[in-house]
Length: 102
Image (cartoon, rainbow, N blue to C red; front, side, top):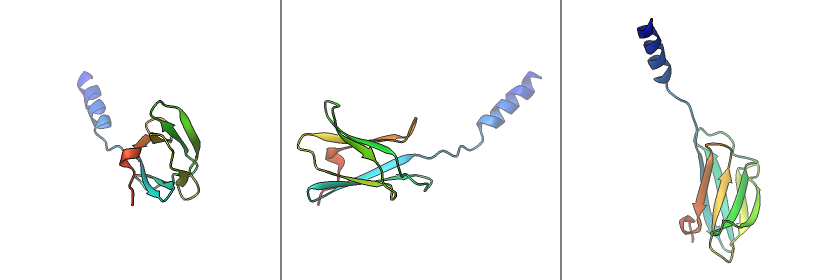
């Protein structure tokens, strides 16, 4: 009986997992930063909360992604990073040094 339980356990945990990850790409466009969120499985990333935070974790601004999974904000004066939170296990941040500039 114990061997059967072990086989069931191994079979259950060896099945493929269909998880998806969230990604965010940001680029500077003049005086604004434009970000686009996406899930690895292609599902919509609309209406997801984001925050632009200082390095001291002070919220500079916050909002939600639009119908196209994007958002735009003015370039902050101080050092910052962008945090996108789609729930547990689906959080991504982009530091200002990783934002594509023209």
